[in-house]
Image (tube, rainbow, N blue to C red; front, top):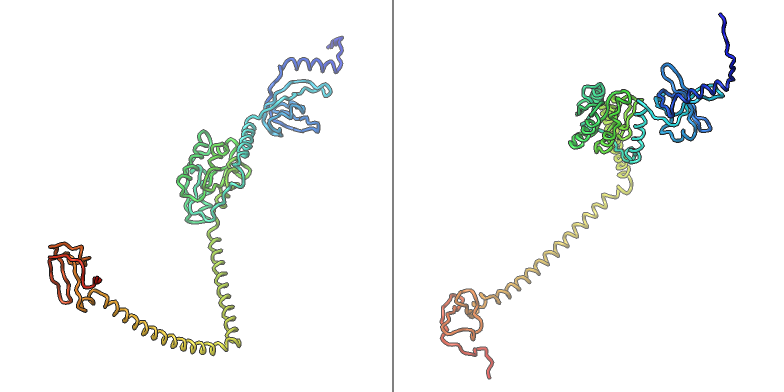
Length: 412
């Protein structure tokens, strides 16, 4: 077999230029390429170097500093992205590549980006500030649980609570924990518990899952409901490596639902042991205090000063008796003097009374009504009826004449 060769010979640069012309003419910029980021590196120049790959191929990429500074996120290995740019050939390496102008996250990466943006927004409003978080009640009597009643998370919470504090009241509000309407259901449940006001603590959460599965607990509606709750909230979303925005808004974040139950209540047996210990400590302290006081009393009682106390008490008793006798005599004297004064004043008042006046032979003239003393004589009228009171009775008189003067009138 004879092989025929062309007379045309190309240099490497010419071949590369031809390929470059074909490639760059084939794909109209900007072209969108979807893949997973790998071998990511940020050069000291600020340029980004990485590859996009899928199950069957790898495409080398470069993002120059000007475009890199405007990316909406920091790329990382494993991210699923759509890169927008130009397909070109790098002559020195003889390789085609994608010059990236911008990128966006896809799938879980897109959700992660949205999550970070909402996190920054709510953090700026102060919803995640430590200063606004409430302490948990040390001994809650009723605990509310917002989760799926049929899920493993609720069974774990219930088992741990019942084991650590037998007899504790658990109130579950059955909710959807993923899918359409889950966020609304969770937020409403939290608000209902707050309106009811009968529980001391809330546990809000579910078991583990993907970012999409846990998404309801990162929706703004739920995060705001948790932050606004007057009842302290423990967030118990997923496993230890999982997280949601509810974790940041809650008063306490638990790594798992079981851990949330352990954080919610102390072990009852441990509390009882602590009470017994404190009671014994108080008892011992009281007994020691009594012993110390008794020792001090006996020591003081045996001292010289205490031996002189009985004599002092006897002298004081004699003084008291003497004071009492003098006081009694003084009181009797005052009573006698006061009695004489009272009798004298009584006699004087009796002599000045109307009855005393009548007994001395005088009379009193009263109006016809029988109660009012008659006034001046010149105020009387002929025919007017008056009463005259004596010591032994009364007579009725009729005025026949009114004349000026009397037994005590001044003589002219």
